[in-house]
Length: 126
Image (cartoon, rainbow, N blue to C red; front, side, top):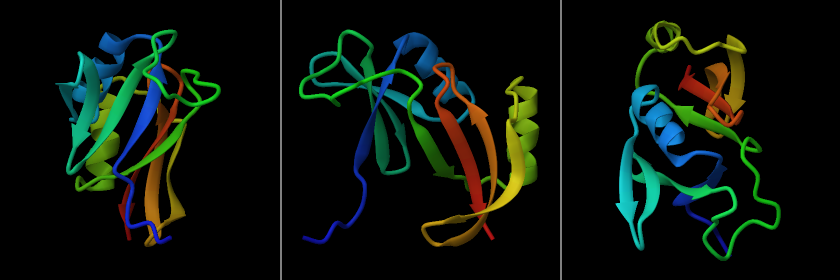
């Protein structure tokens, strides 16, 4: 078997509305409703499906829990502007900008948390 790419991932969240507002307003993602009233966050040609804690879609992770993910997004926006926008949105930066290594090589990253406590990394490849 050879895997080509990640199509989507699922986040379990405490509050769908708060999560969608955060990802829409801070990261510029769009909320999409699909299936039987389910929600996803769309960006580029990928998406993050959302499960509300206690109302997960089956099948699901064995131990679904809000705040258990570490996610890295590659931004088209340059890092100085990313930091500026995070500060303007009153987002507490945990670390960075710092140099890291991603799937395609060296990158500059900044880290913060979403409303559920998931670690979010925004990066620019160097």
